[in-house]
Length: 484
Ligand code: 5GP
Ligand code: MG
Image (cartoon, rainbow, N blue to C red):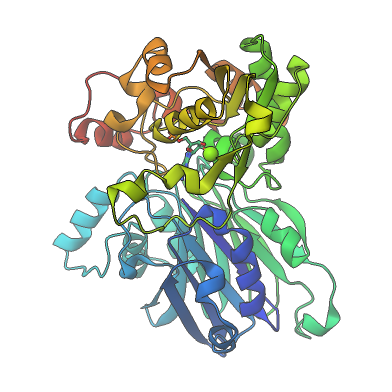
């Protein structure tokens, strides 16, 4: 999972892109990079860590230019090596380019093998480098034509932004797995370049537009290629060759973006993420009611769903767990004793709220079940009388090959156990999930496909993948279970 932010025609491109990346930090905390274009030269700075730590004022001052492209990374393919930090910069057919990618290519092993056989040399292990090599070999007069050509060779999820010396390109694969939106800057004359009246912004999530005060224009459609001319600011739209018409494409938008990944203040494909989650909570209350005293969320991901659940069930909503926001993902865990404190570092119970109460505990998802289990222990120790776990999505049973970092099948709790076994394992009085049908009902009318489908990808819940490569990846999984 990753976040992309790019903009054109701004005097302080690096600073603005820094802000944009800061708003997308939740999409990747492992590493970040920023490239800027100045007088035909692309400068890049990339490092491991968080955006605010990497881009000091000093570093930003060394990124001159009026166009910028940045990326935050959470490695799903290729591991966390430094060579995989994006944007990747290279010279391609004499042109300086920077490339950022969100999503996973399902045919990456096949493409890489083929390229290596023909002499390509790779620096890293991520699938994004494959795209650079394909671009270098693609026919076409300009990068736009080359991008169109290679889009036909890539399978799986690719939301790409490419900055060249003359253009900014942004494209979304034909199935539109990952979000990408277009915005313009609000008028600030001192920031604009005299010859280009428009200042374009492209980003993974609309929450980043709010921060930089840009006006949302529209989502980039599945199968669409946007081309922004840096000299004039002219923005044009193209259709990727394998797509017949943008209006007719049958997308597979990632439903897990709606459930967990996106920030609640983002609009994903036209829908408020917060409202989406709140509604799932309401539907969950209708599908899995329980006689209890309080509804509490598991912060932060369970908050909107717990609010929806409480409202629909007419039970009081309460805060029963306090989250410490300063716990980084990279917290050092030197000994087993300290490792056992891990959850307590992050969440702390409010005993006066919990003690003697029958709780409905709402969260967005269960993946491995290890955190959920510890939370239940914590609540019991704080005196909870009953713990009823309610999950605002269906059981996660299958890995994602399109860019969400779900573990192997054998590590997924719901793949290994039945509902009653999970109830035992988690030590809860009851456990209920949302149905897959309910998720599909959430898609608005205007996003429905010609056959009335929701246009949402549910492969992590259903195990139904849209391509043969993903089916093959599933079979190749070490110790994979039979079936699915
Ligand atoms: P578990 O009980 O499976 O160990 O953890 C469940 C929690 O993991 C939920 O609160 C959910 O919000 C969170 N979660 C779901 N997907 C992801 C993910 O891709 N990355 C991280 N870091 N957490 C996730
Ligand atoms: Mg969570």
